[in-house]
Image 1 (cartoon, rainbow, N blue to C red):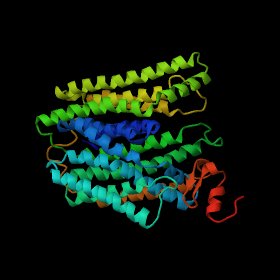
Image 2: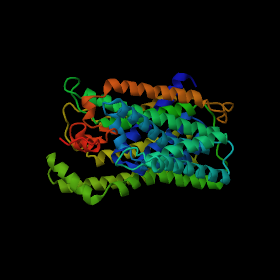
Image 3: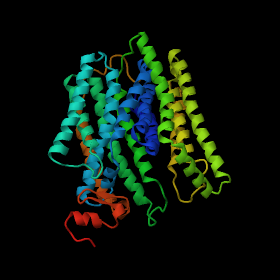
Image 4: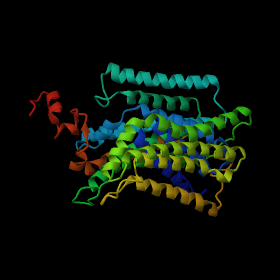
Length: 469
């Protein structure tokens, strides 16, 4: 595998996770993050061209979806507000906490993928030890910072992020001390990659905000979509680039693996879209909202059209289970040349689901607007291009049997590189942040929100003991 080939393979994974993370922003929480989490593992297994990873793909997709999806419990909106402020103490704090939160989001899924691929599977006692260590690390960190020191990460929101920070570090320490190098590598790459993805994505979102100014490019774009898509692009690329150079063992040949794979396939391609439909689409609210928007767009019989849209979402969920049936055929017949199918099918299913829910196919064209929904179609087009073109170069497995993953990880160098990148992001923000980004900013010192009016606002002045103006 040449460097250019490795970059191309990692880019496919980056596109899949970036598109997934961009769509995740429309749905949020645990179920929303399961989609890009599954794409991370499926994309990695596909581009590796390793027979072993093709066989592991269903289970890897499921554990990665659950691991990364678990991060959806964290509150992070105000942290992005801090990173958009124009004072050093606030935006540096914002980018640091976003790095830590992105890291906590990515590390659990990355570690689970690595642990599944360990040559020596963890024993039950080891799994129990790992779980207890993670829980203890989260509890102790929250007790120390929140309960003892009385520090709140983003008032008035919850402090769940602090618990995740401690749990993520405890996981990495356990993996390193127990010399589970494949799990440690996956966990650390998820930690650093998605940490840089969240903070770097926010910087790119700030840049998008600035470029919209009438004095510059004079166009509109959703800076949140820019941030979210960039987070997945960066995190997915870093994870794949670091994991691809190693060979991984095949799963054991027993019946439980087959059943687990079948359940995983059903969960990933069928249940995840259906879960979005059942938990994120409330028919009464949506039908009214869609009808009002369609009426504003000038459509006749908007109520009837809204009913049709709800039916289309249900049909897309059925497509998810159709894809699951096709993946089972591919998996159990061992048709490895079709290893691209699961990630492309889930991506297409969720893209259609998001587009229909957002009325993308119905709202009118807007001048001077870069629509991120259209960008998503460009991303899936690039993914399809890789699928079509890459076989022409007869790609080989990304590593041979001598390149095993059970070797120590050069973590000091990786951490140093990530720290340097984070410093660069903060320095770049000093040139980017300003009047345009303050339009949707928050500050931690003093506690202030853009919705309160000009900085620092009445609430912040009262908190500081200054008379309200």
